[in-house]
Image (cartoon, rainbow, N blue to C red; front, top):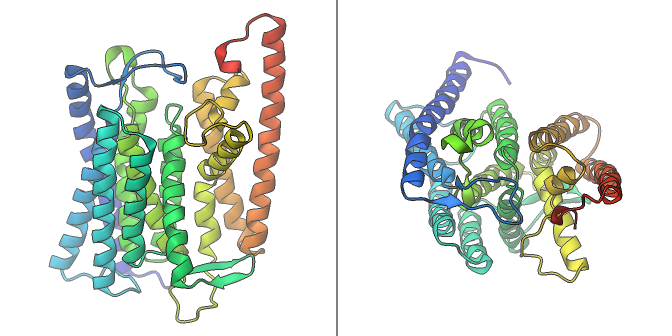
Amino acid sequence: MTYTLVTFWNEIYILVGLLGAAMLGWLILPRILYVSHKKQLFDVPNERSVHQRPVPRLGGLSFYPVVIIVCGLSIGVRYLLGLSINTAQAPLDVLCKYLMLVVGMTVLYLVGIADDLTGVGYKPKFVAQIVAAALLAVSGTWLNSLNGFLGVTSVPAWIGMPLTVFLVVYITNAINLIDGVDGLASGLCMIALGALTALNLYHRQYYLAMLGASTLGVLVPFWLYNVFGNASRGHKIFMGDTGSLTLGLILSFIAINMSRNTTPDPEAVNHTMAIVIATLLVPLFDVVRVVCRRLANGKNPFLPDKNHLHHKLLRTGMRTRFVMVTILCFSGLFIVVNTLLTLVLNITWIVAIDVVVWLVFQSVVTVFGNRARARREAAGELTDADA
Protein backbone atom coordinates (compact mmCIF):
# COMPACT_ATOMS: atom_id res chain seq x y z
CA MET A 1 0.00 0.00 0.00
CA THR A 2 1.26 3.45 -0.93
CA TYR A 3 1.82 5.87 1.95
CA THR A 4 0.30 9.25 1.10
CA LEU A 5 -0.30 12.61 2.77
CA VAL A 6 -3.95 11.60 3.28
CA THR A 7 -2.79 8.48 5.13
CA PHE A 8 -0.54 10.62 7.33
CA TRP A 9 -3.35 12.97 8.30
CA ASN A 10 -5.66 10.03 9.00
CA GLU A 11 -3.08 8.64 11.40
CA ILE A 12 -2.76 12.04 13.09
CA TYR A 13 -6.54 12.06 13.34
CA ILE A 14 -6.45 8.72 15.22
CA LEU A 15 -3.69 10.02 17.50
CA VAL A 16 -5.81 13.06 18.36
CA GLY A 17 -8.68 10.71 19.24
CA LEU A 18 -6.43 8.69 21.54
CA LEU A 19 -5.10 11.80 23.31
CA GLY A 20 -8.59 13.29 23.55
CA ALA A 21 -9.94 10.12 25.18
CA ALA A 22 -7.02 10.10 27.63
CA MET A 23 -7.67 13.73 28.58
CA LEU A 24 -11.39 13.10 29.12
CA GLY A 25 -10.49 10.12 31.27
CA TRP A 26 -8.18 12.27 33.40
CA LEU A 27 -11.02 14.76 33.89
CA ILE A 28 -13.73 12.22 34.73
CA LEU A 29 -11.94 9.73 36.99
CA PRO A 30 -11.25 12.17 39.89
CA ARG A 31 -14.96 13.08 39.90
CA ILE A 32 -15.92 9.40 40.05
CA LEU A 33 -13.50 8.92 42.94
CA TYR A 34 -14.98 11.91 44.76
CA VAL A 35 -18.56 10.66 44.41
CA SER A 36 -17.56 7.11 45.34
CA HIS A 37 -15.95 8.26 48.58
CA LYS A 38 -18.77 10.70 49.29
CA LYS A 39 -21.42 7.99 48.92
CA GLN A 40 -19.25 5.13 50.31
CA LEU A 41 -19.48 3.12 47.06
CA PHE A 42 -16.67 0.63 47.72
CA ASP A 43 -15.52 -2.84 46.81
CA VAL A 44 -15.14 -4.28 50.31
CA PRO A 45 -12.39 -6.97 50.59
CA ASN A 46 -13.50 -10.60 50.98
CA GLU A 47 -11.79 -14.01 51.04
CA ARG A 48 -11.08 -13.83 47.27
CA SER A 49 -9.74 -10.27 47.27
CA VAL A 50 -6.12 -9.31 46.80
CA HIS A 51 -6.64 -5.77 48.14
CA GLN A 52 -6.87 -5.09 51.88
CA ARG A 53 -8.76 -1.76 51.97
CA PRO A 54 -12.18 -0.79 50.59
CA VAL A 55 -11.67 0.62 47.08
CA PRO A 56 -14.17 2.37 44.75
CA ARG A 57 -15.11 0.10 41.83
CA LEU A 58 -16.85 2.52 39.49
CA GLY A 59 -13.86 3.39 37.29
CA GLY A 60 -15.58 1.70 34.36
CA LEU A 61 -18.24 4.42 34.40
CA SER A 62 -15.82 6.58 32.41
CA PHE A 63 -15.23 4.11 29.55
CA TYR A 64 -18.55 4.11 27.72
CA PRO A 65 -19.24 7.89 27.64
CA VAL A 66 -15.67 8.76 26.64
CA VAL A 67 -15.64 6.24 23.78
CA ILE A 68 -19.05 7.46 22.55
CA ILE A 69 -17.98 11.12 22.72
CA VAL A 70 -14.66 10.61 20.91
CA CYS A 71 -15.98 8.24 18.23
CA GLY A 72 -19.14 10.30 17.72
CA LEU A 73 -17.12 13.49 17.27
CA SER A 74 -14.74 11.64 14.96
CA ILE A 75 -17.46 10.43 12.61
CA GLY A 76 -19.36 13.74 12.79
CA VAL A 77 -16.32 15.89 12.04
CA ARG A 78 -15.25 13.66 9.16
CA TYR A 79 -18.76 13.86 7.70
CA LEU A 80 -18.89 17.66 8.03
CA LEU A 81 -15.48 17.99 6.39
CA GLY A 82 -16.49 15.64 3.57
CA LEU A 83 -13.81 13.08 4.46
CA SER A 84 -14.11 9.36 3.80
CA ILE A 85 -13.87 6.89 6.66
CA ASN A 86 -11.77 4.69 4.33
CA THR A 87 -13.48 1.35 4.60
CA ALA A 88 -14.34 -1.29 2.04
CA GLN A 89 -17.88 -1.42 3.40
CA ALA A 90 -20.75 0.87 2.49
CA PRO A 91 -21.18 3.83 4.90
CA LEU A 92 -24.71 2.73 5.85
CA ASP A 93 -23.43 -0.75 6.72
CA VAL A 94 -20.78 0.77 8.98
CA LEU A 95 -23.37 3.06 10.57
CA CYS A 96 -25.68 0.11 11.28
CA LYS A 97 -22.83 -1.82 12.93
CA TYR A 98 -21.92 1.18 15.06
CA LEU A 99 -25.51 1.80 16.11
CA MET A 100 -25.98 -1.81 17.20
CA LEU A 101 -22.66 -1.66 19.05
CA VAL A 102 -23.84 1.46 20.89
CA VAL A 103 -27.13 -0.21 21.82
CA GLY A 104 -25.32 -3.33 23.04
CA MET A 105 -22.83 -1.24 25.01
CA THR A 106 -25.70 0.67 26.60
CA VAL A 107 -27.36 -2.56 27.72
CA LEU A 108 -24.15 -3.90 29.27
CA TYR A 109 -23.30 -0.50 30.75
CA LEU A 110 -26.61 -0.35 32.60
CA VAL A 111 -26.33 -3.96 33.79
CA GLY A 112 -22.74 -3.31 34.89
CA ILE A 113 -23.75 -0.24 36.90
CA ALA A 114 -26.51 -2.23 38.61
CA ASP A 115 -24.06 -5.01 39.42
CA ASP A 116 -21.42 -2.64 40.80
CA LEU A 117 -23.95 -0.78 42.95
CA THR A 118 -26.31 -3.50 44.20
CA GLY A 119 -25.17 -6.80 42.71
CA VAL A 120 -26.65 -8.79 39.80
CA GLY A 121 -26.70 -12.57 39.45
CA TYR A 122 -24.74 -14.29 36.70
CA LYS A 123 -27.93 -15.35 34.85
CA PRO A 124 -29.23 -11.80 34.15
CA LYS A 125 -25.70 -10.79 33.11
CA PHE A 126 -25.56 -13.70 30.67
CA VAL A 127 -28.91 -12.69 29.18
CA ALA A 128 -27.67 -9.11 28.73
CA GLN A 129 -24.47 -10.35 27.07
CA ILE A 130 -26.41 -12.60 24.70
CA VAL A 131 -28.68 -9.69 23.73
CA ALA A 132 -25.67 -7.43 23.07
CA ALA A 133 -23.94 -10.18 21.07
CA ALA A 134 -27.06 -10.88 19.03
CA LEU A 135 -27.33 -7.19 18.14
CA LEU A 136 -23.80 -7.29 16.71
CA ALA A 137 -24.54 -10.43 14.72
CA VAL A 138 -27.76 -9.15 13.11
CA SER A 139 -26.02 -5.89 12.14
CA GLY A 140 -23.47 -7.78 10.02
CA THR A 141 -20.72 -8.23 12.59
CA TRP A 142 -20.55 -12.02 12.42
CA LEU A 143 -17.73 -14.44 11.62
CA ASN A 144 -18.17 -15.52 7.99
CA SER A 145 -14.86 -17.40 7.74
CA LEU A 146 -12.45 -19.39 9.91
CA ASN A 147 -9.67 -18.43 7.49
CA GLY A 148 -8.34 -21.96 7.12
CA PHE A 149 -8.52 -23.02 10.76
CA LEU A 150 -8.92 -26.84 10.69
CA GLY A 151 -9.27 -26.47 6.93
CA VAL A 152 -12.46 -24.39 7.15
CA THR A 153 -12.78 -21.12 5.25
CA SER A 154 -16.32 -20.02 4.37
CA VAL A 155 -18.91 -20.20 7.18
CA PRO A 156 -22.65 -19.89 6.40
CA ALA A 157 -24.77 -17.40 8.32
CA TRP A 158 -26.74 -20.08 10.20
CA ILE A 159 -23.46 -21.22 11.78
CA GLY A 160 -21.53 -17.94 11.78
CA MET A 161 -24.12 -15.87 13.61
CA PRO A 162 -24.64 -18.24 16.59
CA LEU A 163 -20.86 -18.79 16.68
CA THR A 164 -20.41 -15.02 16.88
CA VAL A 165 -22.88 -14.75 19.78
CA PHE A 166 -20.93 -17.46 21.60
CA LEU A 167 -17.58 -15.76 20.92
CA VAL A 168 -18.79 -12.34 22.08
CA VAL A 169 -20.15 -13.79 25.34
CA TYR A 170 -16.94 -15.82 25.74
CA ILE A 171 -14.62 -12.85 25.22
CA THR A 172 -16.71 -10.53 27.40
CA ASN A 173 -16.70 -13.00 30.29
CA ALA A 174 -13.00 -13.70 29.83
CA ILE A 175 -12.17 -10.02 30.34
CA ASN A 176 -14.55 -9.85 33.30
CA LEU A 177 -13.14 -12.94 35.03
CA ILE A 178 -9.45 -12.11 34.69
CA ASP A 179 -9.93 -8.76 36.47
CA GLY A 180 -8.40 -9.94 39.76
CA VAL A 181 -5.09 -8.11 40.12
CA ASP A 182 -4.35 -4.39 39.86
CA GLY A 183 -3.66 -3.42 36.27
CA LEU A 184 -4.16 -6.92 34.84
CA ALA A 185 -7.46 -6.77 32.94
CA SER A 186 -6.93 -3.16 31.88
CA GLY A 187 -3.30 -3.89 30.96
CA LEU A 188 -4.26 -6.89 28.83
CA CYS A 189 -6.94 -4.79 27.12
CA MET A 190 -4.44 -1.98 26.50
CA ILE A 191 -1.99 -4.38 24.86
CA ALA A 192 -4.78 -5.90 22.75
CA LEU A 193 -6.19 -2.52 21.75
CA GLY A 194 -2.74 -1.17 20.90
CA ALA A 195 -2.03 -4.11 18.60
CA LEU A 196 -5.49 -4.06 17.00
CA THR A 197 -5.37 -0.30 16.45
CA ALA A 198 -1.96 -0.60 14.79
CA LEU A 199 -3.25 -3.37 12.52
CA ASN A 200 -6.30 -1.32 11.55
CA LEU A 201 -4.09 1.67 10.77
CA TYR A 202 -1.93 -0.57 8.57
CA HIS A 203 -5.02 -1.82 6.71
CA ARG A 204 -6.51 1.71 6.70
CA GLN A 205 -9.66 0.72 8.52
CA TYR A 206 -9.89 4.04 10.30
CA TYR A 207 -13.33 3.62 11.88
CA LEU A 208 -12.10 0.52 13.73
CA ALA A 209 -8.79 2.22 14.51
CA MET A 210 -10.60 5.17 16.09
CA LEU A 211 -12.73 2.87 18.23
CA GLY A 212 -9.62 1.03 19.42
CA ALA A 213 -7.62 4.22 19.97
CA SER A 214 -10.35 5.97 21.96
CA THR A 215 -10.83 2.91 24.19
CA LEU A 216 -7.06 2.64 24.66
CA GLY A 217 -6.92 6.35 25.50
CA VAL A 218 -9.50 6.21 28.28
CA LEU A 219 -7.79 3.12 29.72
CA VAL A 220 -4.44 4.86 30.21
CA PRO A 221 -5.49 7.16 33.10
CA PHE A 222 -7.56 4.37 34.64
CA TRP A 223 -4.59 1.96 34.56
CA LEU A 224 -2.38 4.52 36.30
CA TYR A 225 -4.98 5.12 39.02
CA ASN A 226 -5.57 1.38 39.37
CA VAL A 227 -1.90 0.37 39.60
CA PHE A 228 -0.23 3.34 41.26
CA GLY A 229 -3.11 4.93 43.15
CA ASN A 230 -2.80 4.97 46.94
CA ALA A 231 -5.88 3.37 48.53
CA SER A 232 -5.26 5.00 51.90
CA ARG A 233 -5.31 8.42 50.24
CA GLY A 234 -8.40 7.66 48.18
CA HIS A 235 -6.63 7.60 44.81
CA LYS A 236 -7.14 3.95 43.87
CA ILE A 237 -10.06 2.70 41.78
CA PHE A 238 -11.30 -0.52 40.16
CA MET A 239 -13.14 -0.78 36.83
CA GLY A 240 -15.93 -3.02 38.12
CA ASP A 241 -18.27 -4.99 35.86
CA THR A 242 -19.31 -1.74 34.17
CA GLY A 243 -15.83 -1.42 32.76
CA SER A 244 -15.03 -5.06 32.02
CA LEU A 245 -18.32 -5.68 30.19
CA THR A 246 -17.82 -2.56 28.08
CA LEU A 247 -14.25 -3.52 27.20
CA GLY A 248 -15.25 -7.09 26.39
CA LEU A 249 -17.90 -5.99 23.90
CA ILE A 250 -15.65 -3.43 22.21
CA LEU A 251 -12.81 -5.94 21.85
CA SER A 252 -15.25 -8.53 20.47
CA PHE A 253 -16.58 -6.03 17.93
CA ILE A 254 -13.11 -5.08 16.70
CA ALA A 255 -11.78 -8.66 16.70
CA ILE A 256 -14.69 -10.13 14.74
CA ASN A 257 -14.70 -7.33 12.16
CA MET A 258 -10.97 -7.79 11.65
CA SER A 259 -11.31 -11.58 11.28
CA ARG A 260 -14.04 -11.48 8.64
CA ASN A 261 -13.48 -12.25 4.99
CA THR A 262 -14.37 -9.01 3.19
CA THR A 263 -13.33 -10.17 -0.30
CA PRO A 264 -15.66 -11.52 -3.04
CA ASP A 265 -13.82 -14.88 -2.86
CA PRO A 266 -15.49 -17.06 -0.17
CA GLU A 267 -12.36 -19.21 0.08
CA ALA A 268 -10.00 -16.28 0.71
CA VAL A 269 -7.90 -16.36 3.88
CA ASN A 270 -7.53 -13.38 6.21
CA HIS A 271 -4.16 -13.96 7.91
CA THR A 272 -4.85 -11.13 10.36
CA MET A 273 -7.11 -13.49 12.31
CA ALA A 274 -4.12 -15.30 13.85
CA ILE A 275 -2.80 -12.01 15.24
CA VAL A 276 -6.25 -11.00 16.46
CA ILE A 277 -6.52 -14.29 18.36
CA ALA A 278 -3.12 -13.69 19.97
CA THR A 279 -4.27 -10.39 21.48
CA LEU A 280 -6.92 -12.23 23.53
CA LEU A 281 -5.28 -15.60 24.14
CA VAL A 282 -4.37 -15.17 27.82
CA PRO A 283 -7.89 -14.39 29.13
CA LEU A 284 -9.51 -16.86 26.69
CA PHE A 285 -7.24 -19.77 27.61
CA ASP A 286 -7.51 -18.94 31.31
CA VAL A 287 -11.31 -19.15 31.26
CA VAL A 288 -11.20 -22.58 29.57
CA ARG A 289 -8.75 -23.92 32.16
CA VAL A 290 -10.70 -22.55 35.12
CA VAL A 291 -14.09 -23.78 33.86
CA CYS A 292 -12.69 -27.26 33.12
CA ARG A 293 -11.20 -27.44 36.61
CA ARG A 294 -14.48 -26.38 38.24
CA LEU A 295 -16.42 -28.99 36.26
CA ALA A 296 -13.86 -31.67 37.11
CA ASN A 297 -14.29 -30.82 40.80
CA GLY A 298 -18.08 -30.93 40.52
CA LYS A 299 -18.48 -27.18 41.09
CA ASN A 300 -20.68 -24.61 39.35
CA PRO A 301 -18.54 -23.26 36.46
CA PHE A 302 -20.12 -19.80 36.84
CA LEU A 303 -19.31 -19.29 40.52
CA PRO A 304 -16.03 -17.53 41.43
CA ASP A 305 -12.98 -19.19 42.96
CA LYS A 306 -9.24 -18.59 43.30
CA ASN A 307 -7.90 -20.75 40.47
CA HIS A 308 -7.21 -18.16 37.78
CA LEU A 309 -3.72 -17.73 36.40
CA HIS A 310 -3.02 -14.71 38.60
CA HIS A 311 -4.06 -16.69 41.69
CA LYS A 312 -1.66 -19.50 40.71
CA LEU A 313 1.19 -17.04 40.26
CA LEU A 314 0.43 -15.40 43.61
CA ARG A 315 0.70 -18.81 45.28
CA THR A 316 4.25 -19.16 43.95
CA GLY A 317 5.21 -16.25 46.18
CA MET A 318 5.25 -13.55 43.49
CA ARG A 319 4.27 -10.05 44.51
CA THR A 320 1.04 -8.68 43.03
CA ARG A 321 2.64 -6.19 40.66
CA PHE A 322 5.17 -8.74 39.39
CA VAL A 323 2.27 -11.12 38.66
CA MET A 324 0.64 -8.41 36.57
CA VAL A 325 3.85 -7.65 34.67
CA THR A 326 4.53 -11.35 34.04
CA ILE A 327 1.10 -11.97 32.52
CA LEU A 328 1.24 -8.80 30.41
CA CYS A 329 4.65 -9.82 29.03
CA PHE A 330 3.33 -13.30 28.30
CA SER A 331 0.42 -11.76 26.36
CA GLY A 332 2.80 -9.52 24.42
CA LEU A 333 4.92 -12.58 23.60
CA PHE A 334 1.92 -14.34 22.06
CA ILE A 335 1.25 -11.32 19.83
CA VAL A 336 4.86 -11.09 18.62
CA VAL A 337 5.16 -14.85 18.02
CA ASN A 338 1.84 -15.15 16.19
CA THR A 339 2.67 -12.14 14.01
CA LEU A 340 5.93 -13.77 12.94
CA LEU A 341 4.35 -17.21 12.48
CA THR A 342 1.74 -15.83 10.06
CA LEU A 343 4.61 -15.41 7.59
CA VAL A 344 5.34 -19.16 7.47
CA LEU A 345 2.41 -21.15 8.94
CA ASN A 346 -1.36 -21.38 8.60
CA ILE A 347 -3.67 -20.56 11.46
CA THR A 348 -4.23 -24.19 12.53
CA TRP A 349 -0.54 -24.73 13.27
CA ILE A 350 -0.25 -21.33 14.90
CA VAL A 351 -3.10 -22.05 17.33
CA ALA A 352 -1.62 -25.49 18.05
CA ILE A 353 1.71 -23.86 18.95
CA ASP A 354 -0.13 -21.35 21.15
CA VAL A 355 -1.85 -24.18 23.03
CA VAL A 356 1.45 -26.00 23.59
CA VAL A 357 3.14 -22.83 24.86
CA TRP A 358 0.20 -22.17 27.20
CA LEU A 359 0.27 -25.71 28.59
CA VAL A 360 4.01 -25.58 29.17
CA PHE A 361 3.67 -22.24 30.94
CA GLN A 362 0.86 -23.61 33.12
CA SER A 363 2.95 -26.64 33.99
CA VAL A 364 5.89 -24.49 35.04
CA VAL A 365 3.66 -22.28 37.19
CA THR A 366 2.11 -25.37 38.81
CA VAL A 367 5.53 -26.80 39.65
CA PHE A 368 6.69 -23.58 41.28
CA GLY A 369 3.35 -23.25 43.08
CA ASN A 370 3.63 -26.76 44.50
CA ARG A 371 7.17 -26.08 45.66
CA ALA A 372 6.08 -22.87 47.38
CA ARG A 373 3.19 -24.71 49.03
CA ALA A 374 5.52 -27.44 50.27
CA ARG A 375 7.84 -24.85 51.79
CA ARG A 376 4.94 -23.11 53.56
CA GLU A 377 3.56 -26.44 54.75
CA ALA A 378 6.94 -27.40 56.20
CA ALA A 379 7.10 -24.06 57.98
CA GLY A 380 3.49 -24.33 59.18
CA GLU A 381 2.50 -21.20 57.23
CA LEU A 382 -0.33 -22.52 55.03
CA THR A 383 -3.27 -20.12 54.61
CA ASP A 384 -6.72 -20.29 53.05
CA ALA A 385 -5.18 -19.03 49.78
CA ASP A 386 -3.26 -22.31 49.48
CA ALA A 387 -6.40 -24.42 49.62
